Image 1 (cartoon, one colour):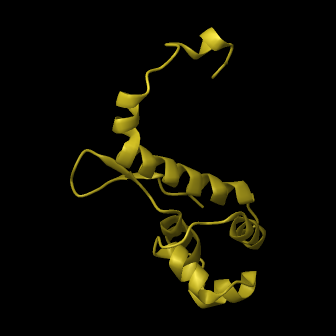
Image 2: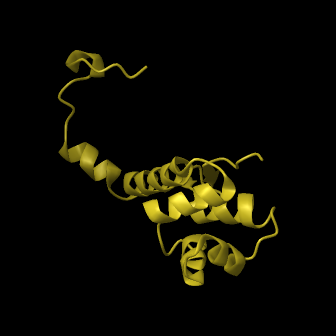
Length: 119
């Protein structure tokens, strides 16, 4: 299965917005596998509204849900947590990133100056 890109162009603007983890769950797993939201909830032993809330962007994927989805779809639960983390970070960058860049100046211009290797 090919996972859709984590970023998409929104509203015809050049600004990239993150794809909600629920979009991935719906478009890459639930729909292609012809599973209903209720059936998925039943199969992973969670309330049906949890799946709907995740899909609608009203609830985050928790560690508990990531473990359940990972087990059910036979993929690493980190996949789900990483989707959620990337989504949260992109939202934060879009909402407060510029403000923080103005408030906080980098101590070092190169991470290697403090011994980090970001290869």
